[in-house]
Amino acid sequence: MLELDINKSKSLNFEIQLSGIDSKDLDGSLRIVVDGVEYGFKVEVTSSSIIASIPVLKSILPREVKEGEQLNAKLEVHGSGYYLNPWNGSFVVKNPVLMEAKIKEDSDKVPKITAKIKPEVAQKVASKLSEAKKVVSKPIVEKVVEKQNSNIKDIVITEKHVVDYMKSKGTTSKQVQEVILEQCKGNAKTDDPKDILRSVIRFYKNKDQK
Image 1 (cartoon, rainbow, N blue to C red):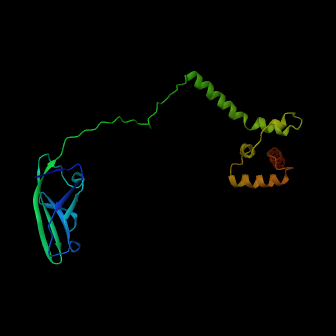
Image 2: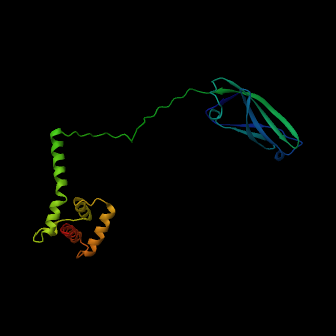
Image 3: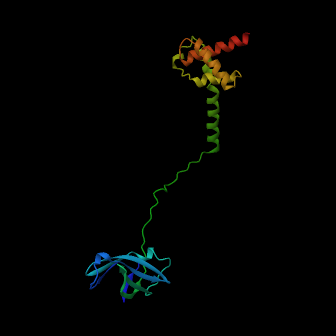
């Protein structure tokens, strides 16, 4: 009785004596029976031997095969109208108990750092942010308008400031804002946002005077 470790592949070499037919005309298979189901594995037939390769049965069989269990097997060869059964036997299953342990490192998990802000500190930060928002529009606009201001070159004006100024004048529609902005750009001295802002301011002053 042959031993068969179902956790490993196995090769069997059957020595044969062949006569009356060419080995090239023959095909065959090694069949192993488990629970009434035959599992066939193709063999290589030569003039002097039959080589059968059995894959890892553990990955093929639908159930766990126990240590010491016997599996019936047979070797079948056919060709040119002939059917041959040169070998019948059985395997005794070897299924040793194995266990492997590896240290698993989870690189995705990194220490998390949390920070807490005291209520009084948070209140001061919120207050400063609120003051900063108030300084965005009107003070900047006033400095741009004042030509005599010596620090005007250091003031950074963007198109957002221009739009914010139009909003402060009650123009909240984006389409109307774009129309006014295009008109004021055409009336401005340069493409500098400061000049465009001055042109927008003049537009609203003229509008208020009408």
